[in-house]
Length: 283
Image (cartoon, rainbow, N blue to C red; front, top):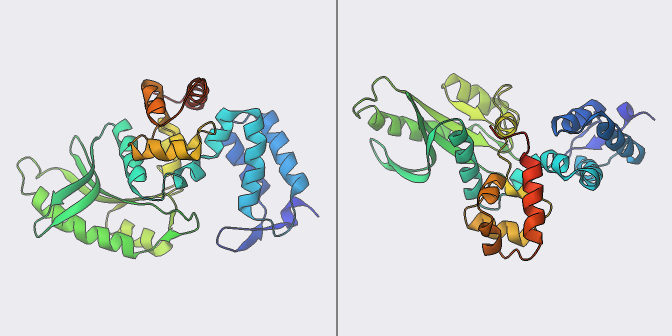
């Protein structure tokens, strides 16, 4: 039996042929060199059996990476690390806000915005030059869950109310206003069709082809603290509750680790991993 004939189970329950090239691409994108990619891929293939879950495959690959390179392991873990920002959606909102800041936007997170008819609680408001955006962040703790068309429908209706008031402000006549939806999972085809038709910006883990959430994170080098394997889950939760979402934030202020209960030489180990993870990725 070859790898191509082995069917594995996705998070949705669907059985699909195992895609070796997809695994190799994920490893290479995470910074694994040719030798490490080959070692991890060979190990996974040797242990691959029909019906194995993609989650199990991920764990096997991650374990191999973690034993050899925490930097590559942290980057490989990125999608799961975003999920670990939950269970509430607020850390994800802050993370999206930081990505937009990196792109030069002036950002407000979790604000009440007055519309023409009523006020709205908006996850992120981003403004840069002549561009003004209202961003709805849809966080899902289940990677298999998708954003359906109801989400952009709802966001569009709120945006129209907000945009009407924005346009009444001095200097906003010539500004480009746009409603966004950003999710850590995926959109349904109807959601993408509607959002595209209405001129919205829809950003998911792998959409659009150029400018997806994954690409924006890779380009910015802004990795969430949940990528760090040296941090305990309880410590991550305390940091997130204190509004800390980025590894770069820890590197700028090590005292945040002590405030989260990290003691002794573990502070140095965590900072070393954070530095290694973000190496050669900061602008």
